[in-house]
Length: 241
Image (cartoon, rainbow, N blue to C red; front, side, top):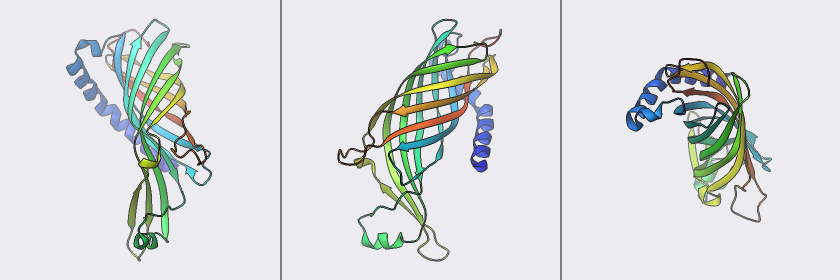
């Protein structure tokens, strides 16, 4: 757990140094409209704790999330937020080993050291943010998720001194689309001035669509708890939004 927190902190520090250049690229592509008080982009980076409801055989796990946020100011109190999160992984550890269909390979998986299941989604939340104070805001709205890949990853040691990694594609068994809802709380750590700023957030999102296609299997759904930071870019010199 400590190693994960240190990794997230390191990535946040690295992103703070590079994200201004990425925002400058957005401004170059979209023009001045990409960085105004009423319309601007943000970069988002954090950690995700995944929960698969109905699945009792694995252990919930952490992964990283990253994406781009589009902020549209509607009034002094309300902002529409549309996000594109291409790295939104749901992950489970210590799952049972499935048969690969290859008898020889299955024999090599007897001494398994770790078993992970990774469901790689693209999340598209559309949230309405309400300002609670000069520092705090709350957001809520629907979230649409698109499954792009899914695999079980087994690491075994069939012989001393060797490590065998087996990737088993399970995408055909799963639904490609999920719809749900998300709510988050945000704190303005550094007010955005001159194109710089850092917001801290914590978010809970819940999917309502069953993950597995098979109607005869138990109904599994997913939820995530996310926390991290966003780096907004808007030219403003007189305090927080």
